[in-house]
Length: 151
Image (cartoon, rainbow, N blue to C red; front, side):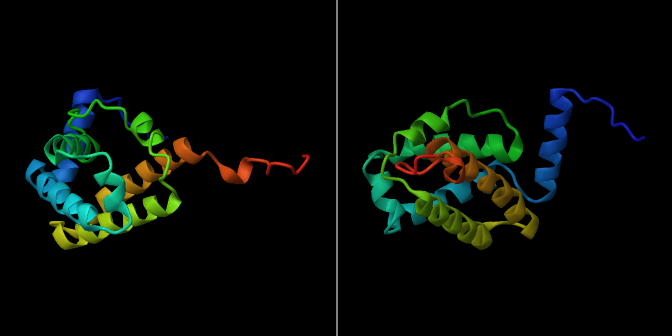
């Protein structure tokens, strides 16, 4: 039986950051990615209006998203927000919005990522985040009994 030694949080963080660095992911890349992605979001026919209704000054939002992705991709610990309550307030958002968000995110990654591994690194995390937010917002429809079904 091969048991890995228990690592401290700083050791685990350093390991994750080294893995990201090997893929070409650093704060400068995250800055470029977030800027390019949200430029596309603002121009998108489906996503743009959702964001435009809530964001007037993009600077704070972009800074928050850079901190968020730094925490997600580099385990930097910069982000301390609460994305679920923010997304629960978005009553007009549906599954199709998440699908579009993921498609634009992947498109942006493929255009900007320093390595193919960086695309995978971000998309794996983005898909988990999208799934988590959708579960929080919509639950598990396949487990819900339709109204009026009598079951």
